[in-house]
Image (cartoon, rainbow, N blue to C red; front, side, top):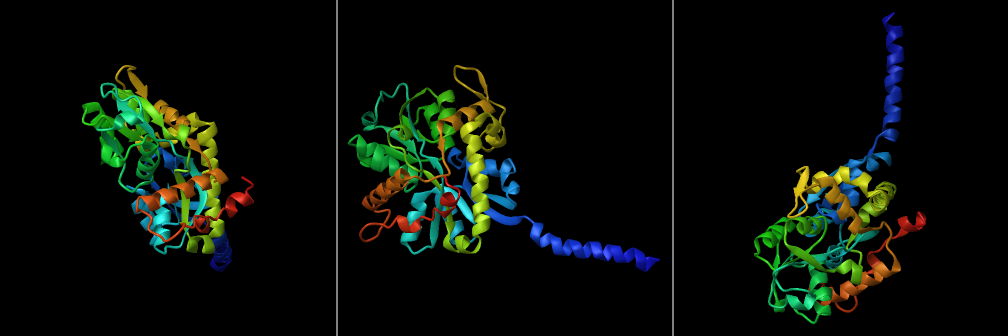
Length: 331
């Protein structure tokens, strides 16, 4: 009697042992920075899109793209959403890295205090500006594109690399005259500080600010899993671009913990509404176009001029690109 009961149990357990490896979700580690530019990774995680494509994803936060790229180079991450300038720098030192997809085309707003007398980029001369960490993609673009286009050099003003929250506080307190901010911090600053937007780089010089980066080893050994992650992030981008009101509840807590933002003159604004509006300002794209690649090559030259990228001759951007996923998906 006992034997007859155990036999089906053993058969059932044996079946599980055979089935489990094929059906178990693949572990996958995704690095991100807490900025709207990385919203596709946060949303894919929170909305269960990684799981939809068979991934047991772990989302790992980094304070900067510089720290994130070290995680990819060191093998602690499978992919990361970050500025391509980090990949250029590490690849120039011999790191085996690949850019495999797009994320967001650069939204960075120049916000000036109402009492600072700043109406154009030229007016920043002699002023105090809060921006991002020196050597970051935003910093490279600020100095090599925004200021250079106005005939200014970095030494013409006082540039302070600070966290976005500190930049907003500095605008509110009058400790800086202007700030170069990405979303959602630009939207928040407009609500709580006496500022006006005088410039937005995406309107005059669009570029692929954030891309998806992996290691050559991950691409070689885990291509199917990597492509599944890109599929999940493509779905997230579709929601961000076409259904921002649906996307914002998933990611609002990453940026604003309080239920409302207390504005200077509009009363209390629901935090999800602030994030919805911030999503709408961005241009998310899983695809890298030829125009995007041309911009990357322009910025490689700027990085060389700024002595951030130290290589002899022209830096080979094409060698870092693997666009087989977007080609297979006909994006």
